[in-house]
Image (tube, rainbow, N blue to C red; front, top):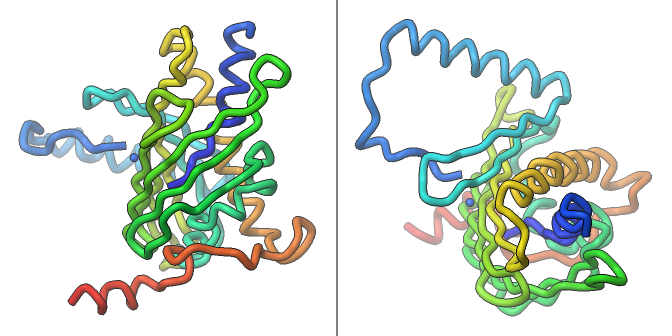
Length: 237
């Protein structure tokens, strides 16, 4: 669903002076025991970095689309993270201050469509608007894509992974954006690499202080945010 690129486009203008998809497992080669140990060691090191509060930024060039991804560890349950993450009104003016307006066009537990208006880089380009479609797998994944508006292309995903016995959540945010302006893709990717950690850090801070210094949790919400994973699973059976 989310990923509001107002600040991202602002970064793009500055740099120019102005949902990770895994590789095709069918073509994967067997991994040797030594290589598997290296992979595990790398995963353990990444988890330590996340526990230390770091945001890990990486890329996925395995497919035709070159996504940029970032990961963070949030000291709360996937259910709590999900309630904030799937609520665009929590992004508006809080997690993403440049998000100025959100209009829900379709609101279902498994899917939403919303029109967003974000401040970009006044006075050169004051606002952009775009329509984004999101599909939800409760407390696990959001896959989103642009279906209209200013941006030429915009898509990605959020993935939640329980950690520490479900008491913490690893959040992975992947994005590809083509703003439709004459800016090289390497600059776009650099801007994305700068912006994703800011969004993830703001999300973590919002969840940590959502009922205190940053103001109470927004009472407006979406069906995806309020319908629990067990409720949706039972309805599909």
